[in-house]
Length: 144
Image (cartoon, rainbow, N blue to C red; front, side, top):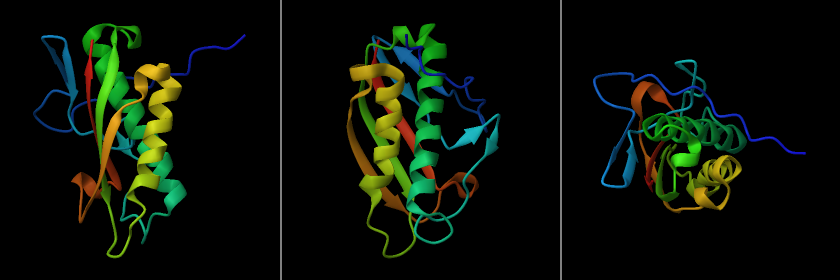
């Protein structure tokens, strides 16, 4: 007998914005970083201070936060029809090229939480910095 994977509590905004919104059947999140109880867990550039496996774990936390934000807007994770698109921003050191491998951590977490409804198209983008020094930030677009 298996149980549903644990969904983290909905993330608290770190500024003046909404973590997620729903309109006309479309669901969108703000950028989600790897925070647990409001505390950033992984700070630094991937390929420098943060290793690949740590970055994958950070991406999984951020993806869980994004699903939690969507679930709060629609009432529960069951109200999320399909994750359509995920963008993974990687705070990447110069020369780092394994952005997709980092994004795999987020993709796996989405499928763990939502099954096939979590399987989405995605982009993995390298950037030189992220809010608070986070190593990753994730945005989701979905349908209800």
